[in-house]
Image (cartoon, rainbow, N blue to C red; front, side):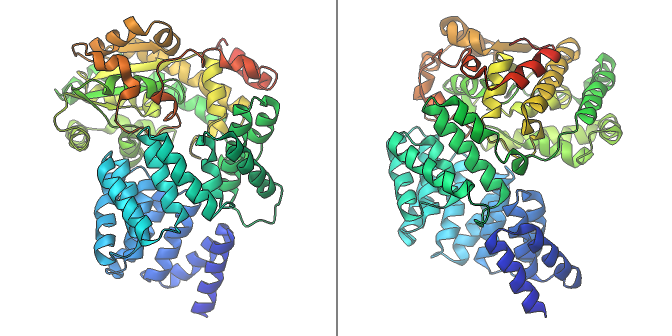
Length: 520
């Protein structure tokens, strides 16, 4: 009975029916809570549908029992990477390669962990080892392609992408990455294959993968100048990527920010402050220009870029859970000095892994604008840079980008406009009450007047100007955001007022922004 049920669950995973797989596996786990096989496959199922934290819980349980199974430790590391916790992934990935040095999967995941920790030499070594062990591994070629893109090696990236494509031309994970290919012919060939998959509901492809394929198709059409067709694809399968957006709940949540996090809140907690001036926080809405600002800053010899660290999102979740109501604000008001200092010191220790010898380390998670109450309490001497961009340009770029599923505001043009209005209102509030110096960096001004804006950015970080910052595109640091190809180019003005190309397709967005008080 046990083996029959497990076999049925594995068949469901193989065919992409993760809902049924989870149902079967959860029943099995209730009767066999410590069984490593059941916990392993539960972890795989949760990881496949985009819940890495739940995957970690089950994979940890499996690893406690099956202590010599390399596959379990590699998958556990993979789940940590998916949850933006590469520092936690690394020891498990290393252990997996020790347990099974001939495992292509283990070496690939080790390479992914090193890549996310911005250790590209070690990452490349591990990924090349994976390909040597299995030259027919499309996923390892794809991982090495992504690494080379992050380093600006576009020729090497395309070479490995072509290898992946030739090996598995109908694999969704390969086709999804066609968005970054430079060869127009190869892009159109990928588009044809994507269209076949999207047109066949019987294909065993998960909803999330269908959504990402649609985003890629939209990007390919956009690059070809077919904007109407691009939005046709962009409107497909969005609900498979993003759950419902609760506008009333979000409105209440942001309204409570202004009531709770007032001047008195910060005045009463002055002793929470740590003295470090090392962090540089770059934040704003996604796709507003934060990657460009990080690239300029991290080109300075005294600055390291850490990318988008999920640290404060994780800490706030640990403190408050997923609640966006009264429990959240009760927990934040209840945070004491001892616990706050523990969080702050843990963060500084994390920054050490990105730049031990650097005076500044840039953390450019856009969503940190929601966590400024905590950042300002802990690090009043840090650098705070809020990047702004034309609302319509920002929102169009977000709408065209497959952000992770937690960004539910990206579900439709109307929900995106609503959330943008909440963000803009919160930033006006922070400007009035935060006990730190906020620099509001306009993307448009930066690209129009780089000779004055770049030195101002460096000066705001408390550093002396260095000419390396005027050639940020030569910065050898890795970039993993959706802007990783753009930041390798000199500053250009082509993205300013880009929304005008799509005016016919974005009327709901423009109407929503107008109602929210944001001008296009």
